[in-house]
Length: 151
Image (cartoon, rainbow, N blue to C red; front, side, top):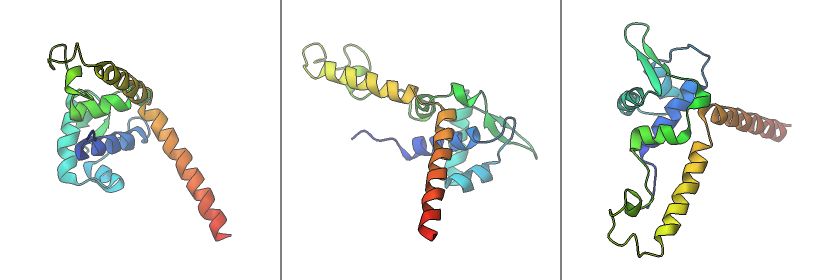
């Protein structure tokens, strides 16, 4: 089964949190952990990976914390996932030619290639800035629905 790991999911939440903050705001690990419902023990490790990948920058010390290393408009969902999970492959035959001895004769190989291409289109087609906007739209819709139910 193809499934994003818990670390990958937590990384997406953490980067979304940072993307939703005003430019230059440093977020404490505790703040990210609490608002995104991510255990601090997991989050520290995840933030190190995101920093090494160049998606997040960290500042040490009493006023330390985390911020995006570059604009949210330039960070894709795929980049965040791959920073934690490594390169995404839907099947072993896509890692490199010859990884699967059947890749040249397998009728499903071309299907895997197309499925992976489409997955990458979706993941590369969503930036953190777009997802922050989507989250705001969802919140407005839910608030509106709650208001109707109360009336």
